[in-house]
Image 1: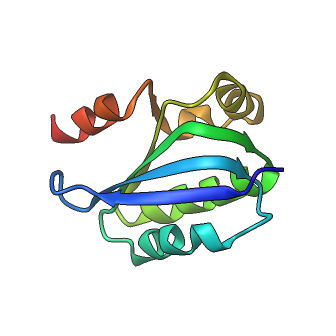
Image 2: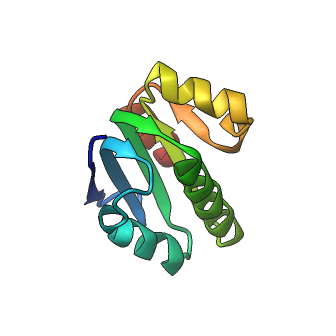
Length: 118
């Protein structure tokens, strides 16, 4: 199984917006790459997170659970998670487990950012 690499970029505008680039397998095997992201989520306060899943090759039930927990926490604090560029297998998993309606999903990062600046 591939390791997970998460790189986070803070945007100047819109305020409180970050892009998290996921690469590899999001499966709970190695939680260290998620520490900075978890901190951003728990800080709350209108944080907008765009998850770029272009290079995400795999996610499992652990990842689904994390995404739902993060979504619920951010939603309660006027924040949100937006998914950008999910691979077909990731989108299929979202549809199968019934969480695709929980997230705004866009074909790429610029489209996701544009919805926050509109």
